[in-house]
Length: 72
Image (cartoon, rainbow, N blue to C red; front, side):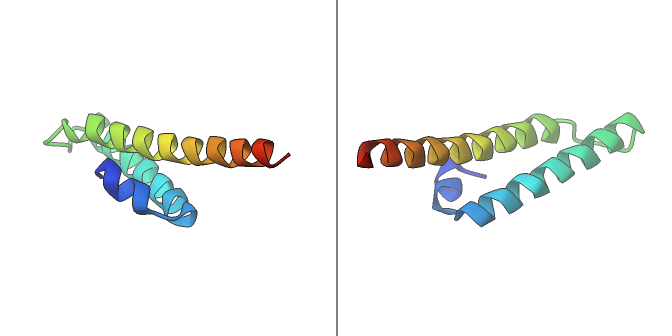
């Protein structure tokens, strides 16, 4: 996923994307442990996708908190 794609997602889509990517990472790790994974470079890219989604979620939380603080 590209950062621009992530920024366009809604909060619900971000939560779903986070759940899906974590499940995909689990499956990749399982396949790697059993020797069935051919392309091990997918694991770091999935980890980066998870980090990007978590960063966007957190930045939205901070923005909402700042908006509430500014309103008071």
